[in-house]
Image (cartoon, rainbow, N blue to C red; front, side, top):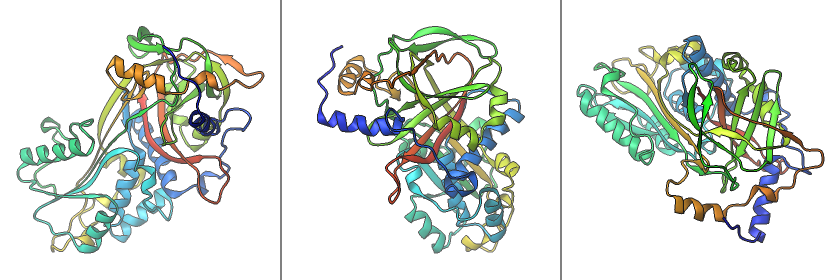
Length: 413
């Protein structure tokens, strides 16, 4: 495959990517603020990530899963604006004060965020005004007609996510019951290609050491390229940059032991994330699995385990409902989807499109390794944690991008 000459636009993009990637000569971005001082929404996303992963571990369920902390946090903030003082206090106790919705943490996603409520209820204007201003869909339904309601909700989710998430509810799941009145529902996915045209070999079936082990399709780079890499006592991490105008990275955290996923989950917190994002340059021909995960989660118990309980009590939403009957949140449901292939997230499926697209991308070889760059093998052949982080350059600060949002977190096993 031929590559076109390097243009001025390429050079400008390469410089941006070099800063994001942490390539020589500039060091990688290193957040200096302690966890207690980071923005409240980012803090909430990290707490959600850690709590939900540990919830899966405690339940003995380490199957593949994905969720969007950014959208879950934004949905909680939507509920916060309609909840009473006790529910607000609980949320503040978990995440800290000043938890305000910053839509820049999720506006680059393909998402659905809604308060679904019974047509028997009438919501008061202060809350409806807030939802309308913050892209939170208000969706009145007839919960007495469950079959039709499920179809309507799934249709809206599919519409808002461009058909990438076809449904969030299933008749057989018995998630919604007939006395349901209030439901927070959210769904999120994204599409993005890798920033570089990595020359991968054709997908090949390789042993993946899950329980039990199985053969899965993986891709391996044809040549060693420059990557960002970090390492702890019992884990290694490599990141891949998504391209276009959105500074987004996929981080794969791989336990050193084949059966090390459980211990890695116990360690997943802000400290581990900081170590992952503050990597160094290495040369590697990475081998990574092709995977696609779609998960639907009822979050009632997970949120209660975190200490957010009053939100589900019978009078938590009295101030936004004009009816005399008290109401609390009956259901908090979330769906997410991620696909990773040799072209990015939801790369194109037609070979001709792939070839045309690869001809337009920067070749990673344009980034020259710094002197003494370490050479490593990075083979993702065992269950791992991943997260997708959004970076942002803030006005009034230096030009280094800083961690802004944890858009997705999950396990592949």
